[in-house]
Length: 319
Picture 1 (spheres, rainbow, N blue to C red):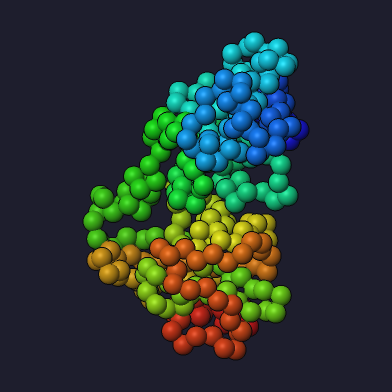
Picture 2 (picture 1 turned 30 degrees about the horizontal axis):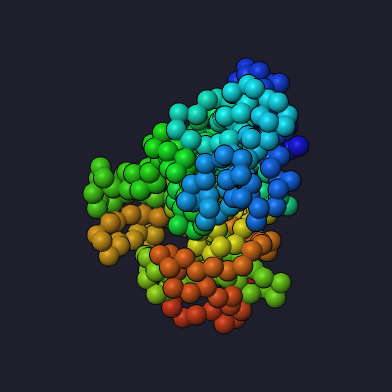
């Protein structure tokens, strides 16, 4: 019902027929009545084409089966409704506005106990900028994490192409570097002191800048993010942990001449680092090989010697 409620809200925002959107949102997951293990067989028995990706990961074919049930059981003959149901999980090339509304409502409000890590960024783009901006924010997140998904459906790839989603090309820092080369610039980012129930703090042995040194999880801001959204995204990408931006407490800012960095590839910049603190997180630690060599919790009185200086300074502020 939450998906329906958000879909109706979005329909009203963009002057779309609420009855059409509501029907599609109510029926989009009707195929949940069929066990996941039986979905491919059901599809084949009823003449629904099954792609290799759907055979390998049957959960994803539920969108097609929901369309079949809506059309053949509920006698829905409105193509706008049927098409939106059919692509609500993956989207597709050249989607209608109904497709877009049901798709993004599903991504923000499908049944779960906690908000997804991308929620705030996507919802802000959706409600403050445009429907397409919200979808692009979500698709950018998926594209960046595409190697973590069991499969990438061909229709989703079509949606990437339609919205011109290519994370490497859209990456803000890469875009700036393409114009200024290795010259000095100012870059802003967030880091987070995450404490467990024993008061230990999480440190990341870095695999990029300051390679081999221990530091707080965090990273540079991307276009359109708030500082808190930056912190939430970077923590998830580097540690696998999910934090809520409402749990973040401001610790301090580090900037100035001592914040100058020169990377191995020749890039130079002055970092403006905003530090937050939280003891509320969920999930399990997961090392991102590109970002991290190791992740460990440390006692405040036993921090590693090889630690990023500015990060040690932030930690000492809370002791």
